[in-house]
Length: 102
Figure (cartoon, rainbow, N blue to C red):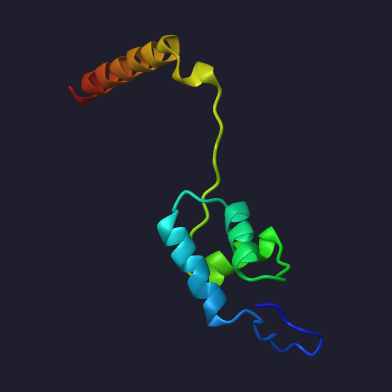
């Protein structure tokens, strides 16, 4: 929670209706992004101005929802050549472990 100049916590201006809407939205669409949540809130609650960072904060702190970040990988990572090289490495590693165990 944010604190004001006197050190007291500011009361959340969002009521339980907003929080419930957020939880329900992400329950129905678990792959939705933060931007999707902002758009949903603006569509449902006319006149609402809210930033992505605030929605992310509410999801995490008040609704106990986790936020996942997408990780991008090159196409080379999953190419047959790379997969074969990994399989060879694992086989060699297992052989090495078996030799050490003797």
